[in-house]
Image 1: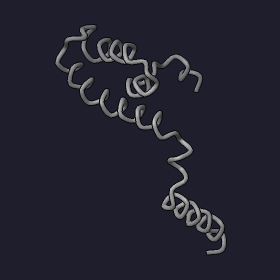
Image 2 (image 1 turned 45 degrees about the vertical axis):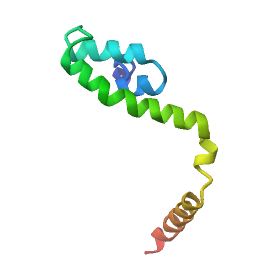
Image 3 (image 1 turned 120 degrees about the horizontal axis):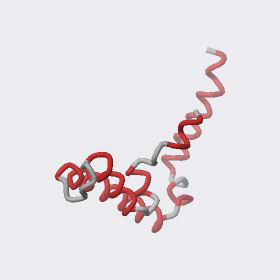
Length: 90
């Protein structure tokens, strides 16, 4: 468990936190032999960057609270609570 402190963050996490340059450096270092123009690095960047960028944009526009106040989410939470309460008796 103490080794986790010395492991680098994943590129997806770095992109989600807005640290794009660090994510690109990580991909280049570990997947492209230090070259940012390596085909593998470019392909992984095309996969990682758009999805995380869209998620950041969507969360900043809607806010986290609004995402958890829809009727479907409330129904799922009620069902999950019922399941948790009834499981010990089954």
